[in-house]
Length: 217
Ligand SMILES: N[C@@H](CCC(=O)N[C@@H](CS)C(=O)NCC(=O)O)C(=O)O
Image (cartoon, rainbow, N blue to C red):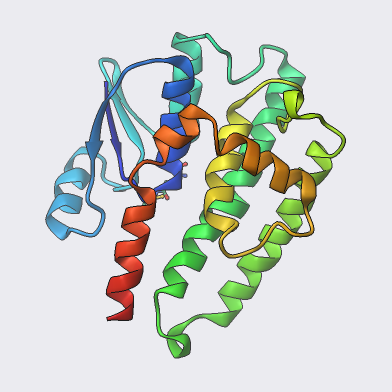
């Protein structure tokens, strides 16, 4: 299986964490999102040009959540989406909240921060900050009172919602501090040590630093 991804992409991290958690091997193909030729070549495979995207013998699967749903169907251990429909629905909801209001806004804040102050869109930045705060509040409620052994956003086991949340927090926590969200801060510190998380984020810091130093030049 070929997984098209990029080290800067939190949605790629989320997907890679699922592969590592399940110990399923894959062939990583890095798409250089900053190189027009590489982007064009990739669009011939997947016209929307978004990563991650998984090429399976049965066809192409785009979208981080859809990839994890597929993985969970064919490689069931450990389950990342609970079998119980109510639990599954809640995991999917938290996955959506993390993707739409954390990860997406982290990317927005990051790319805005690379622009000179006078070119930054303050309205979009304010909206992103507000959505992140509100989403932090939601996740704080889900985590409050849990001990380290069951510090997962739904129930007492790792799920797709945790992968989405960890991917999102990796980006947002650099912009919106977790000072007023102690359970979330403890959650991030704990899971940042998790081997799947460490492995999935390899290369991320270097790409971020390169982009920031080119923006300063
Ligand atoms: N909803 C998608 C979002 C994917 C996404 O936005 N990927 C970004 C990188 S994190 C991307 O490919 N950006 C390149 C582009 O928009 O052309 C998912 O969950 O996979």
